[in-house]
Image (tube, rainbow, N blue to C red; front, side, top):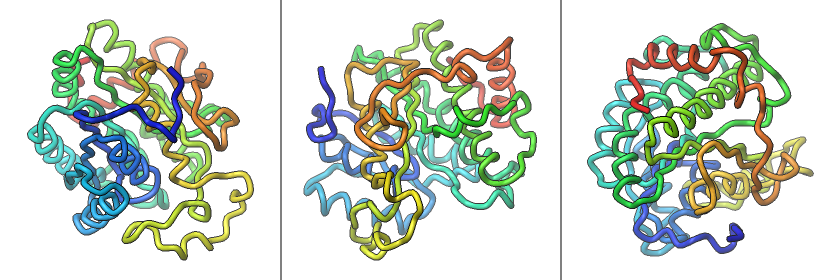
Length: 308
């Protein structure tokens, strides 16, 4: 079937967990999923912002089924509590690992990890590991694989970083952010291989959003003030709003034709409707046993053995 963001496949009866869902791509992914009939669970660290995001979605989608769970990706203890709460909410069909810090590289998580690596990689790896049994149970019960959707960036293709040591320090935000997303791609592809080998009914899918800017993002009460549309951004002429930047993840979550190991993003790399894009050989087919070494480090850092 063809997929279009204007007419999403019916999601009635399905439950999607979206992290980082109080603003940006995560919020608009949740809103779009709710508009297709899904039960959406918003997971983020601020109870106040979670309440505002839930109210905004219900403004846009009257009667939407929206739940909230507090999740602080900068604290593995919070990840464990959130995973327990999420599993208790009932069957989970899909997990969109979107949330993470987007600020300076200074500082660490409560577990002493670099803030970007800790929130973009380590916390997400722990969350997927803790929720994998619940996802697999849903996939088996429905006869359709559950999905774990990872958020990456086009920067990974442009800057081929050596991440054999996942916590090796990088200089500056751009390299630190790209390091985190490179590790994300490595473990996402490795997860797909392990899930297939174990015949686990869960698919691991990668996405990247292209370029989304506030200046082109529609206002939402309590979430996006209209004044944000006046923010100057040098990327605006060839970028898209955060609502459109959510489309690759929404397609990965809703298109019945998507399978594990695929990578979705805008066709031109910047904006537009999502398509299947070519794998990055640096992360999809790493040299030697690099993926296994990264996996072992993440299990050690999280204390969560992923049963794939």
